[in-house]
Length: 574
Ligand code: ATP
Ligand code: MG
Ligand code: MG
Image (tube, rainbow, N blue to C red; front, side):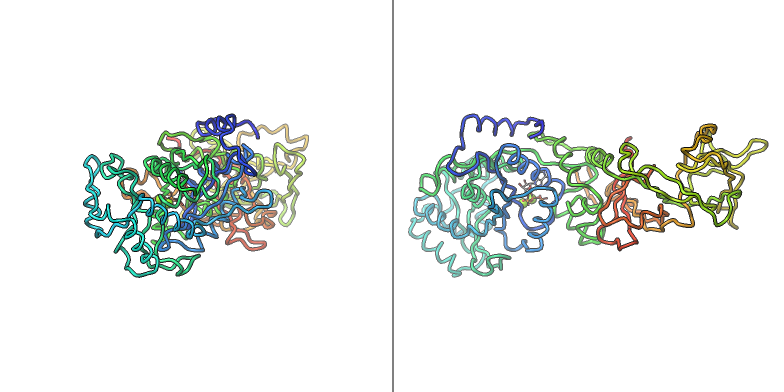
């Protein structure tokens, strides 16, 4: 591996490796897993977990499993399984090793999970509770107040087992009974609410996207997760901090099932790290779904969305996201990472890769009056200024050109070195048309409303960039342009951050109120002619404007639509 940035999890893995903690026949010394629930699209927060789990396996000669945590039939769908698989692959990770495909579904363990539950009942570690939901909630107590034992807590194991089998056989309605674990006699007084006889199975008459109608009882997350980890011989089960309070149950369950002969030591261990929160975004699936359902964005893959499909369509590279995840590291400290950190990783990744191109986003006609109508001169410029071996691009200089509207001021402000007309006795500005000629502004045309409709210049024939004569011209402005005769007209979508506030949903705020009304502006731009060959997903740096990608959905052959990935500099610095 390349130089590893250490963190507390790496330190744990390295000490386990040194101690030989997980030396097992035929198994790698590190097995991690990424366990998404297939109930939505992955977002940049998931990317942190993906990079951590797959990165750990990669760096220590292990393997990372992709496991769908699909135990909640009501919210899960095949569509989500497919997009999650796509996104993890796109990020650059693989769960195949030595010809084995480590793709798993918790639902494949339903039979084993069920048998282990029967064991727990028989051994006195679980019981069927038949209280109604209200009583169960009331008797659970509150934080700081002990709960009360269920009247069913000491029902004979044989009775619990019989009811549990009938639950499985479909003899009861949803909510009539529930299976609960009994970690200790006094568990209902545990300060940690998660340990007060946690539910491990519930009745749910619902169709499951993989097991169909085979089951009408489903295991709870807290029960399923440790067992799935153990069945897959996971060594380090890395999860976010909110599961810290669930860890005692994780450990108890695996220890108890090991005593029951289901597992062998060493069993997996759970370690927690802090979630990623990114400024100017919301990350919860529920809130992202609201943006989609309310039509605020065009879909899960809207380029403003923090979903991986959205970031991909926006033009983010997998490498930039991996780089970002490396830079933010992992710790147990909660906090917010600034959006500019993600954008900086993107710029650092794209700068050496992206070919340069010219685009005029807000066009204004520039007429070179002393250049013959109908003629053209080829101009060239490197595909990439730092990599001459990537060659040159060629575009024509003609009489009619497009420049940016804000590259002309009729009355220039102080220090403005771009186009302005003669004022009194003073001549108009002299400006270099990048990679072309030096021109001098002679005036402008206006329409009936007084809006500038064209700028007039004369060019100096001996000033062409790269020729000897060009050195004689000293100018302060260096302006990009495209030839009106050959420019490619294209739709360009100028994306910006989705929210105007750094923490749009902090403290339960109404995040909809913080939406950035300018997060999307669509312009009709003129691009250098070579851009007609841009392929979907191909990224460019449009000089002076930023990084752009040919939209993977709406581009058609010869007619790309471009998305702005990010500007060249951070424009959000306060
Ligand atoms: P959400 O709360 O957005 O619905 P989730 O945690 O319910 O997300 P899962 O599909 O259960 O989504 O998550 C799969 C894995 O990704 C879990 O291990 C979870 O801890 C991790 N994960 C989810 N969100 C983040 C985040 N913001 N930062 C780091 N890891 C995350
Ligand atoms: Mg979840
Ligand atoms: Mg969640």
